[in-house]
Amino acid sequence: MHGRLFAAEAGPTAVVIGAGIGGLSAAWELLKAGFQVSIFEKEKYTGGRMVELQMGPLYQFTHAQMISGDGDELFSLADEAGIADQLAQFEFGKDQPRQILERGLLNNGHGLYDLPSVWELAFNPKAAEEVPGLRAATKQRLPLLQADLRAARDAVDTCQVRTAAAFDDESLGHYYERLLGKQAVGDFLPSVIQPYCEWWGWPPYETSKAALLPQFAAFEAAVLPKGGIGALTRKLDSLLPVQNNTTVRYITPPDADGRHTVHYLNANMERRIVTPDVVVCAVEAKYLDKIVQKLTPKQDALAKSSYFSKEAVICYILDDKHAPKEYSEVNYTTNHPDPLKAKTTTAIATPRIPALNFPPHVRFVLARTDTANWQKSGQTIDDYCFPLAQDFHPALDKKHVVDIVNYTCDDLIFMPVGYAKKMNEVLLEQEKSKRGMYFAGEYLAGAHTAAACSSGRTVARCIAKHWA
Image (cartoon, rainbow, N blue to C red):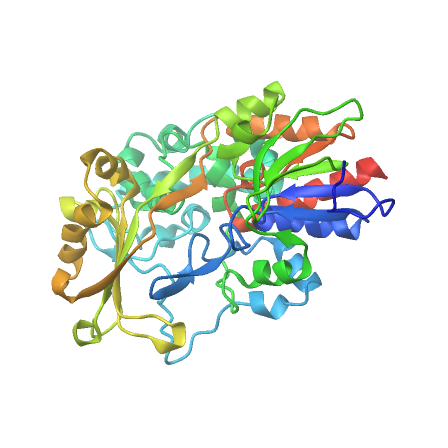
């Protein structure tokens, strides 16, 4: 039954589960194709990981911060929604220092440097001179990276990691060790590759080269949106039928007509069911086998190999009297000889900046490689990180801290060796023929907002084609 969600005889019906950018993008395309659509979102807000929220005294991004420059589908959607200007690059002025919200210099114990792209290092020998501590033998072997970078650039859509399945045969760490030799473990890997992996939270020797080699090859600068990372999802929320505070309990297998029944709780915590023509499941991968009954073997294999990297971030909000005098930032590599600095990915001290709505604070990001040590320690994130943050900003004193904002969370879908191939198998399966349930999201496309958007739009077009 359709319940009261849809009008009778007014076109095929679709329930989209999840109002992140993947679900919103799918809903947008389905409406264009003539479907009646209702979007179920368990949170009180819309946007998923592409959102800004008020967290105590901070109003900021909660997950995603920038948009991959090669996200054509996402920028096209913003244009269709009438807010292309809001996704233009943020312009920094004299009251908005350019380094704010941008990654600063790295320190690997040998010196400070801007992290060059892997593409630049392989094709421009001079770029290698900018990375302190790289040995001559390593620099001489960097051109060996060129062939694979060219192949990845030509063959792979970074918003559709399934296109990188041919590269899904070894880990990133083993790949560089094989090409560059054992010296890559000592200098190139920790000084160049590991910092990139820190952004995703992916260990080099566990991450498939299919996940990051195409990103290195694309060499597209990320965009810090003028309207903030939540500009597009806020706009889509105003244009699409999103039902917030609506929690899906489970989805039954297809009936004789191939349709699935969605069992859910509405905003009043009342149990409801609906059996639409199509369900688009755009939830995070970790929920798939919990809400979908009887996944296919390929879907189940993907769900069981899907998990998230962890990010441990804490912000100490300071009173104005003890605010940092100026903006400062440090970024350390995990092989830094100072053990405290090796536990630090990024530490930032920020004075009050009215233009960015920033109160004075110290932001500390724990190194991904040390996150497991914190989790095993039994300490709170505050107790574990405060001494490390104080090492960066010695003036930091609990007596001057007026609030603490804990950003610690599940971060991005992890892509081990074999993941891209499993992803591709699921997509091939659901593209074969008309069905009652389809899947979309970053776990089927790539671990960034533009990929999730591409997934939603692509899956919706597949549905429209099947129903045509």
